[in-house]
Image (cartoon, rainbow, N blue to C red; front, side, top):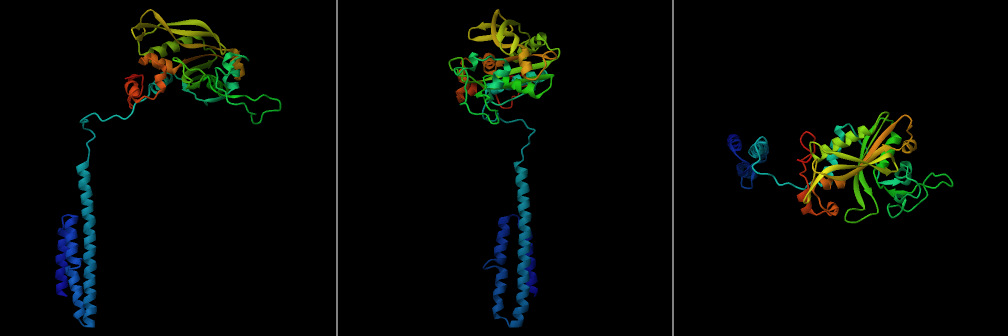
Length: 368
């Protein structure tokens, strides 16, 4: 059996010295292949006697198994070493500066940017964000907001109504509340007052819908409304909030504001708000000049609205305001045509859009 032991030493030595998988495969073929050394030994068994064949065959097969096991073990070691080498060569030092600016994919739409800016400003003042469904009832959209029967806003030419149907669970003879696409985000104020106990401080951003379409109006647009209900809230608080918002949003040190009497069914008294500006060619600059521009409406919440929402007007009072997100986005970023906001032109979005990682913050800047 000396030749078997010598051959095993030679083969295991060759296996151990194999530097890569290609060299190891060459050793395997030389040992166990069709013309390999171990295979040659097996071919000699045919010329032996039965007793010799039995003893010799067992020894050769054991040699074959040990060599195969050594090859498999060496293969795993080589694979692990190759993987370690590859990982070491492909490691990226993330602390090094970029060699070049990476390609940017996509832009944040100006409306999404302004939505985040408005939310950031009011959140810093302590306001929560309230949301509601786009499909509303006539009751929440009009009745509980003190809109009288026959008001123009209730008509088909101003509001998108759904086909009337019997409301589930309505009593006999009771007229069901008709569904519609909300014309403002004020129903969210109603839902908030019905579900929460004062004090209440919320803003209500969202999509709204009106049957109107021309150069300055679109059937779908965006609004943000604010609501404060407390025992001692008054117009002085409202003026301060709007003044601070305009300074932060338009990123100016100061802006003069003018409050004019107006009328809304859901507020009493009602006010229109103008801000100081200067029109310079095709630009509007805020915080300077002698011109005025109306940007929003506001007022003290009407006592009837408080009653219809389950709040005692003898104990609580509040104020509310509303403005168009589309409108203030156009004013701040110089967008000339309202329709461009909804056309989906990638070239326009590349120009007016914002980089995805530029999150608005009051500390770092809203629109940097």
